[in-house]
Image (cartoon, rainbow, N blue to C red):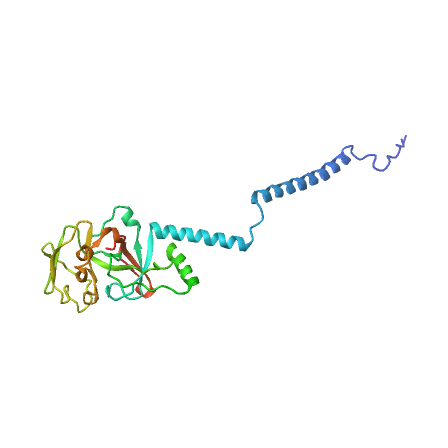
Length: 262
């Protein structure tokens, strides 16, 4: 006998969990979106505020650059320009040389054979001209102070150390001697000899001083020419800025003399 089962109303046979499953899926998506928004918010907060405008960033960067340049000039290297031919052909007119200012801070002392930069001990250079334009004068003073351009007063010279305190130097004929021993000078300008027609000595260099001469011996007003001045022509070690370590400009004349100018 056939048994007629009552029709199940539409949807009545659906599993009881169907509606809740739909709700869970919908709720899961919403929660994911909330989490994503929260994550982006935290990321934005970690990223910090909006970047500062360029008119604020530029002066800050310039100030940092000047501080770094000042530190380099004070403790590491300073650039000087060669104004004359007294050190040719080792150093030429217009060369820019890097002087190692850290060496004296680490116990370095000048030794014979090293090219050094030193402050005028008095009367070696004529008075330096000043810039009549107050604006350019102020700008050059600042750039010189931080070491981006050579010293403004340009009251510095570069020569080679020949003898140090306690040594006796003498030149006669074509022969230069220190403590009675002949000095070999392969760096001399072609055509020059060690004395270049100016005999002197013997001269004992005072303690704490150095005797300096140019490589272009016939074109260098050095210790030989200032024997009637302070120190008898010798230069106080305290006036020495440091050894010339390199020619940094022009590119055609780049050269490296070593950490201590050797």
